[in-house]
Image 1: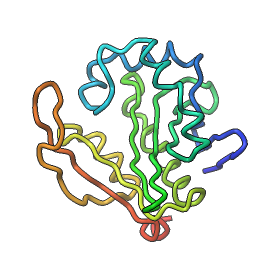
Image 2: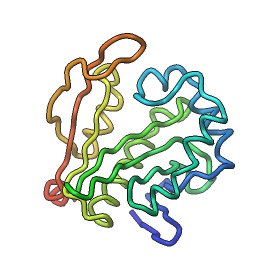
Image 3: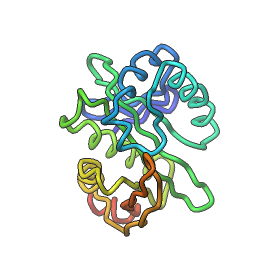
Image 4: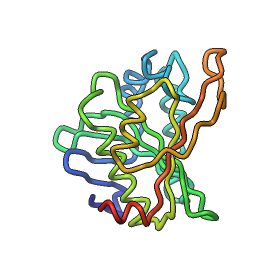
Length: 186
């Protein structure tokens, strides 16, 4: 992982994680207007349009500069193709944050989420000095669970019927990793 503070980018083997900009809005809308993505995400609206994308992107730079959260586009390092998004919240009081991500359905199964998540973990621990990073996923989204496990997170529990999606209560599976455990893996 290479973090370039001035550009606010994280570079991995195949990916460049960078801030979104307004020019990304049409492609964000295209990727997010997908029921299969919506059904496995907590806050993504459906249908999803360009105004949703612009509204979402609007405060990313401010949040990054204020160390509130780091919301980055997952892009192909060579072609620049927008593949998805990854975010990390920041709770400076407890030196931890929650990681969340999505990848457009056309790009599923290529390891992009795993690679981006590993890069974001390194950023959290090495650049931002977090003690812990955690992630949650719907119990029905096994693929997301595999990503979290591949980057070394361990299951900490299940939040029973914790959220409502389409009128149904859903369990959230909670995973986490401590910096000391991350250091042992790397």
